[in-house]
Image 1 (cartoon, rainbow, N blue to C red):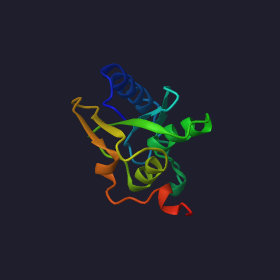
Image 2 (cartoon, rainbow, N blue to C red):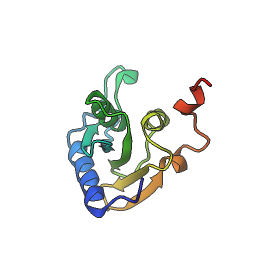
Image 3 (cartoon, helix red, strand yellow):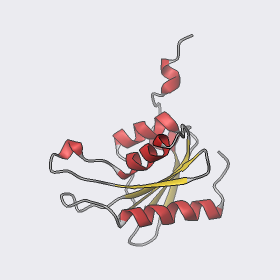
Image 4 (cartoon, helix red, strand yellow):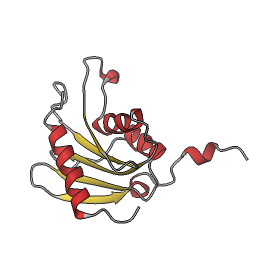
Length: 138
């Protein structure tokens, strides 16, 4: 995808910040907000939702992506993630992002405490990845 416009970038970050406030994180006390830009041009937000049975919890990135997918989208163009320290998506989230985004898709990480932003491509975060094309039949 071409570089994100300032307006779309701002919308992604603001959406992720909004969803971070809705976090249900009573165990880790680590709220996360995410926003995914889908191919239809809409932005889908998500927050982390923890559970006392830890493996049942959901990451913000996967919530946002699953919302987009459930609305019929099959391609994520960009993602923003907001945490208190600019944390990066976990391995499981990186793999889910890989299923629906190109390796060139921008991933914006934002530190909610100081406003610092970093931008990576999915390929930066998940080098030598395994994706849908690896399973194609020829």
